[in-house]
View (cartoon, helix red, strand yellow):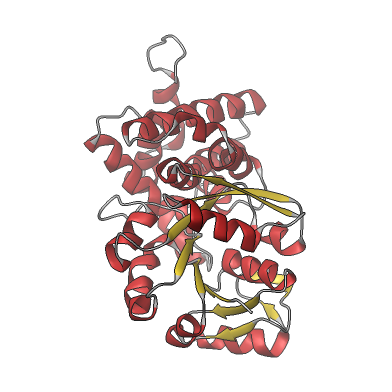
Amino acid sequence: MMRVAVVGGGAWGTACAIHLARKGVQTLLWVYEPELCEIIRRTGENSFYLPGAPIPEAIECTSSLEQAVKAADDVILATPSFALRPTLQQAAPYLSDKKILLLSKGLETETFLRMSEVAFEIVGYNAGVAVLSGPSFAREVAKGVFTAVVIASRNKQVSSHFQEMLHNERFRVYTSEDVTGVELGGALKNVMAIGAGMIEGLSLGSNTQAAYVTRALAEMRRLGKALGAKDATFMGLSGLGDLVLTCTGPLSRNRQFGVELARGKKAMEIVRDQRTVVEGYYTIDAAYRLSKTRSVEMPITEELYRIVYENKDIRTSLEDITARVYKEEEA
């Protein structure tokens, strides 16, 4: 029987492990905190990151990364984006010939690399690496709510392998060869959801929210074009689908981060007080600086950067962006 290691015991990693176990896949769940591993074994619940979601007894929990990866046929990584590189570096000696699926979404702050690019740097450019993205709140996946996602890889055999592993009647998996587009959609929607949360927190209305989401998508497409992604990808699950979910769904951590900013909290205060990771907080920095290196116009991203990292007043930022010169609508 195939054995899969899910590396990362946050909400998404836990939900993925639950889904695999339901499908009858022998699943190992690696969690960073030894005390959380003990809690999961004792209570059958991840009370830190996914409280209320029963974890099947068939899932084996460990805090030994070596044990998890060595025992597995395939590895699914669900760490925060900033933890992917050190986790892969530690696991690299045991990853030979294993297929790797990345659930992590973001851009590396120092290098602007996408998650698959980080993985290839560490495990080699011939490795079987795929990425998963799409509108998928962990809590709903854990409950078995119908979800549709996309898996992308430059190797069709790898994406098809993980598609077969994960797909069922409640978790529909599509495949794509546009790794760049799928990863950018998954990373940038977290940035844009912060702005959507600000609009919600300021009670600016549905017209404003709809206009914002539309223009946010245009920014995502512009950066995607500059980096060689397919434009059509941004109209699919990892683009428009994930953007709409994360900008409007009440379970979105990034959206809630924006709501709290609008209510007067400081960014670092919110990040410090949360156990869960707000990926958009880190991706704003990388996306803003990447857009400058590529000379891509991203006014929403720039204003979000000013608010989050330079403490610019939110209402002043809104006035600045709405006062921009009018022009023809284009992508």
